[in-house]
Image (cartoon, rainbow, N blue to C red):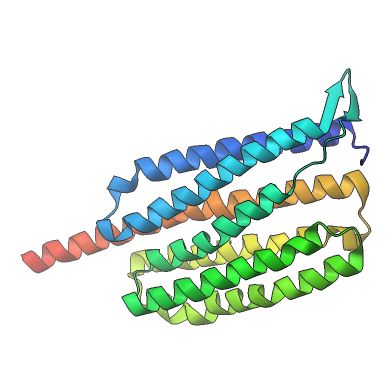
Length: 255
C-alpha cells in the first residue's frame, strides 16, 4: 500500500467528487435541452448525455473505492487493506470512448453510408485501444506497461488519422456558422485524448508510489472532464447552430 499524504488523499478525493458533480450536471443539461435542437441532431445530443451519465456513475464508484482504500483520521492516513479499484475507469472508457467518436460523426450529419462506416471503424478502433491499454495500466513493471502502451497507440494513431484526414473533407461541407465549432470539437477530442498517454507514461518519468498514484488519478480526471463534459457541450452548441441554419433554410425555401 502506497503511503499517501493527507494532502494527496484530499486532492484526489475532491477531484473525484467535483467530477461526479460535473458529469451529472452536464447529463441533466444535455438531456433537458434535447428539445432545443432539430430531430436530426437529437441522437447526437442524447449520446453526449449518455457518455456523461456513464461517467458520473463510474466516478461515484471510483470515489467510493478511494474512500474505502484509505482512512483519514486525526490528520493521519492509514490503508484499510482494500485495494483501490482502477478497473472502473477502463470499464467507463470501454463504453464512453467509442460513443464520444460516434456523437462527433452523428452531429456532422453525413450520408447514411458514411455515418455507418465511420461509426463502426472509429468505435471498433476506440474499443481496441482501451482493451490493449488495460494490461499495461495494471502492470507492476515498466517494460510490460511500455509494451501494452505501444500496442494501444496503434489504434490511437489510426483514430487521429481518421479525425484529421478522414473527417477533414466532411468538415468543409458543414454550414459556415458550425464549421469552426466542429473543428474545435475535433481538436478538443484530440487534445484531451493526447493527455491520456502522457498520464499513462507517468511511471516512465521516475514518478512512483503515492506521487504516481496522485498524478495519474488527477491527470485522467482532468482529461475526462474535457473529453466528455467539454466536448458534450460543444456537440450541443453545434447541434443548435446547425438546427437554426437548417430551419432558416427551410423557411426561406418555403417563401
